[in-house]
Amino acid sequence: MINNSFDKAERLCSKILITNLFSKGNRVITQFPFRVLWQFINDTQTTHPAQVLVSVSKRNFPHAVDRNRIKRQMRELYRTQKHLLYTVLKQANKNIVISITFQSKTHLKHEELNVAFRQMLQKIINQIEKAI
RNA sequence: AGGUAAAAACAGCUUGUCGCUUCCCUGCAACAUGGGAAGAGGAAAGUCCGGGCAACAAAGAGCAACAUACUACCUAACGGGUAGGAAACCCAAUGUAAUGUUGGGUUUACAGAAAGUGCCACAGAGAAUAUACCGCCAAGCAGCAAUGUUUGGUAAGGGUGAAAAGGCGGUGUAAGAGACCACCGGCUAUGCAGCAAUGUAUAGUGCAUGGUAAACCUUAUGUGUUGCAAGGCCAAAUAGGUUACGAGGUGUUACAGCAAUGUAGCACAAAGUGCUGCUCGCACUUUCGUAAUGGGUAGGCUGCUAGAUUCCCGCUGUGAAGUUGGAGCCAGAUAAAUGACAAGCAUACUCCGGUAACGGAGCGUAACAGAACCCGGCUUAUCGUUUUUACAAAAUA
RNA sequence: GCUGUUGUAGCUCAGGGGUAGAGCACUUCCUUGGUAAGGAAGAGGUCGUGAGUUCAAUUCUCAUCAACAGCU
Image (cartoon, rainbow, N blue to C red):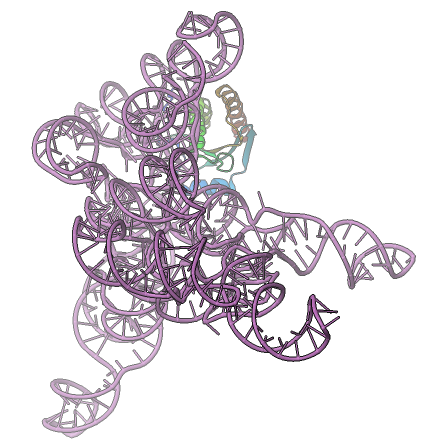
């Protein structure tokens, strides 16, 4: 049985972790329309092996309605596919933080997003296995 | 039936799978697990006004500064709204030499230019104590005459300009002129109507007073400053101070004392910081002593959603609005929940058929747009649907 | 969420009611054997957009759009 819930604890909210990720995180993956930045962390107290944040540029989507819709779609994709990432991380006993940025300037259909997200996740898993 | 304007209501629905936030029940070491309920707007937007709430010394005082500006009313308050008045513009009818009058519609940042100061480019003779360029008239001089020239009068005519100092007609005159007269317009006073803005009637006044206050300004009224990132509480590591309470400086006189010093009275206060730009005023510190251990960043809790609240009926009022009674509880997130996907169906749109009603196919939710302390307004954006009111009446049936 | 500033020539900026300028850049000519510098002439402007006040608006007022900055 796959747990598809998406709690508050799985979201990246800590300011310190965010600034640390954007200043020192050097593992970058680009899979259009997504741009991913991630990093290992040493904190072992978290209940989930990964914390994620999603962001959409205000420059590409000036209206809050459009940004909210894209962020909801991205969270939904992560929620339904995160078990692939979790199994790898639990085997290696590592924790990571991830930021996913939406790069396109137009809305995309769900099918395209779904395919692109799966490819992106596979790239992350490959990098993790290589780092281990 | 169809148009325009204004106002009001709505601005997708159903099912399935997987989820998010808050609350309740079960249960627990715990926010586990399971079940249930609720969860996005008319503008949530812009942040343009007003109020609540909070801190700043308890809204400390004056000046300055800023805002508003027909009248009455509504309101917690307002720069908002309602009703009325006035003015401007448009349309129709009617009428004049001209301005007008009546009816309908639209709009208005609509106090004061007769308190003072400033400005009014270019053009034009002259632009605010008016002005004589052309022209008109009179007199003098020159000339045979035409005419020229000098002095004076003149704002009716020409020309310039955004604007030329009431309009038109008559009397009058050398020519002219509100110099005088009728009508119209303006100003002043009084009466009447109205709470008032104002309207209207009568009398007087020849008219002395151009525009600009979204130029300075005057008058009246109002505004303390900062905003929930306000404010309060909990609180690890690290650096080393922090907080509360009490006393208060200098000079001089008197008394006590050998003296140091103590007590009492009188006089005089300095510097810095903060409180609104300035002035005043106030507080604190610049010292000492005593007591206590706390202050504060990441983060968390609170403020935080029961209120100028929502719905219904009745009553009062022309209306904005007010109110008796009854019923109800209705978002509270924080890198920021309220969704994603699939299927189907209203509506809209496109194509085909049809005079039309409508039928079939496609598209697949479709305008503006996402609460962030809370309310009342304003402004701006908006695919459409429905209802009501007002106005106009062409063509078709 | 709250608060403020600025939009003028290709660029950097003046002008704060009377028909828009400066420097650099651009074009042509002169100068030089040639280039630079220098000299002369020229072109280039919805003054962010829309309303209003005024005889007249880049300037004053209101609305709106865009860019930038600060509070955390």
